[in-house]
Image (tube, rainbow, N blue to C red; front, side, top):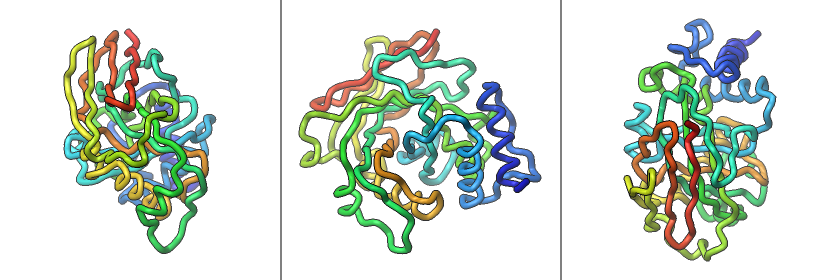
Length: 260
């Protein structure tokens, strides 16, 4: 058994048992970004649920501080972790205890690996729809701030639950998503607000980064995949029983309830 497979099976057990570990055991622990992505790919192979889409973690300074990394990471979101708007989000032993508001895009065509980087224009042309999303991330590590980027990547970049809305019906292609404002609410009270600038300066920039990161390390992206582009607000501190929502202004809003 390869070291990557061993690490993936170790992490998979924590997913299914909903337990937390200090770190991946040293003999199979990924040492760098490339090894982390190889473990994540193996994890995809041992999990029963198919991959529905992708997320970017740590596109904002607040997100980077939260998980103690210096730059963004991508991870897979599994179909059994997708929830509809208004859903009750499982929260048993969640160690991150936050919710995030993010722009998500669905791809209209494959973006396979290639040597030349994809341009922003190519990525925009390959995008089918814009969606609102509300992420409740989590980590399989007891202290996710101490394990480093490679192990976070291996654990699919803190992916856990994602509330994904339908395609946005309002005009969005001609709108500056970087300047678009949104706000986060907890139990009817506005807590944090922000804009698309938090996602690497522009959600389109973040999406282009993700396409190229996947091209480099993950075998590319496929038509029908969605990509969430990172929180546009300071993550909302949430607790069991909270009613949470993200207001995207003219694009609408999305909400959920944290299980209590």
